[in-house]
Image (cartoon, rainbow, N blue to C red; front, side, top):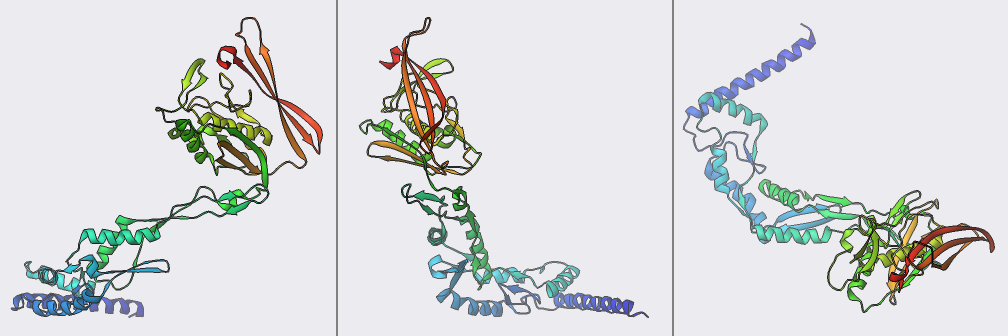
Length: 424
């Protein structure tokens, strides 16, 4: 007979013999007066109780559990850090007799054949029942919350501090989120198993939106805008501060498009008492908007863009020149209607530094200058006196480029009309 066939015949013979032993043993087990004995091969929380009666199984488990309940606890681990939650502080109480009864009742009231089959299964599968227990849920949540507070970290973008001559780059912080519900489930599972090894905590990492690598290449200031505001106007000031906070730290990558409305979001423009109104032409109609202050932040950014030499793709003038900006150098915004947009064509990332200092909105653009280039912004105002048009002021804005101090080119930036009845 070939060796190959002989090998499999031996395996088959062994399995059959073991099955017969289990079946015969099961029948003898059922027929014998051993109703208080647990099936062989059964474990409870890693402790073998198969073949023991109820009293011995309870005593054995109590010996195993007593020491742990007195001085032990469940160990939690995340990375190299560990925490121990003591059983006492969790209010843990094990129901050993109840768990032993479960083990005793496994297939106890089934037919002889079913019992024999279960004995065969328990002999080789070695079922391990978790210990029944109760726990003080409020204490557990309190202990877990303490661990979570040591792990949770908010993601923080990389940012730039210092002035244009001494820029300091601060790297990003990767955020960490402790999964409370999932970890409570893991802890409860470990308690039922009387697990000695640490419970590995479930924590997710949250990547920040701006990383240090996104700021690579930024060297200097390329444009600056400054506008004054009145602190006494509290509603308007609050809107300015909110918009500045939303704008500060924004990074526009090479060839990326910037939208003021997308960055600021609608939440800044909350209506209510104390907020200044501004006249804006929206969809061909004059409207008084209650987003006072937000337009000033947009106008300050627009001025910085003018001096940075960046072409603006979308910009809207106010119906009347605002007091904080020169005619033609303002930018009106209205969520969903009027926006300030530009594309970064510098070839390097642009970082927006926005702040409020000494009753002024200050917005500085950081990036890389064109070597030897300086820019002058020129505004010319003329009276409007054309037939069929209301009198007022016409503002022409030009951008003059210089290279190494010599005039290079001049471009028309904008042509805006401000009706007289709104400028007075």
